[in-house]
Amino acid sequence: MLASGAVRTLTLGGLEVRLAGGTDREGGGDGPLLVLLHGFGAPGTDLVPLWRSLRVPREVRFAFPAAPLVLDPSAPDEFTPRAWWMIDIGRIQRAVQAGPDAALALAKEPPPQGMPEARAKVEAFLDACETELAAPRERVVLGGFSQGSMLACDVVLRSERPPARLVVMSGAPVSEPEWRSLAEKRSGLRVLQSHGRLDPVLPFSGGEYLRDLLQSGGLHVEWIPFGGGHGIPDGVLERLGPFVAELSTEA
Image (tube, rainbow, N blue to C red; front, side):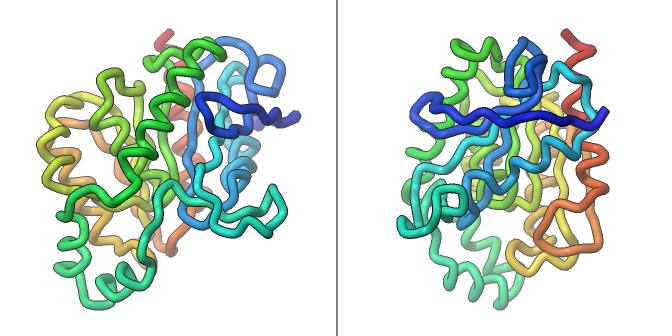
């Protein structure tokens, strides 16, 4: 069924979050919870409309946290661009233009400044979801788009209590040597990963590299390549709904 209803805004674990779905259509009940982290420069509301596009049981809930760093304080609240950590856009673009080897060299660097702090905030948020929303980690699907997907991947690989599943939409490897060594601890974990073959922001080859890295650690990656650029096409959403809904049948 396609969702309809309201969206509730509150603060959990120090992050502002929009909640939807569930028995009251505002995040209530005890069904599985899909947490999606938005990309760099997007507002906290960026991914919220997706909850109306997914075919899932009514009990499935959705949480869309807003990143803590505000890039333009003068923008209206719902359109304020945000970031999970600061990135050098120019440096990334130059590496992308230089080719796959240069882009991968960036991925092999230590974690970017601010990423550990962002990970701690998401961990605190997930803890709050467990205590305040009755959403234990084994009933949570954590994912995101672009920078948000990289943070979701970092949380899943490093957490002592990882969420049940991972969604990586248009992501890329970060701190690759550490991720590779951590991946084996997540052997068997289900992953849904998508990437556009014409992505001008994060190259398709980076998505393939991340896919191979996760698979080499024993994670079960469902790979969805598509013909577009840096985005989330309908074909990805068609698979994302069942990927989340499966947790309802596993309860």
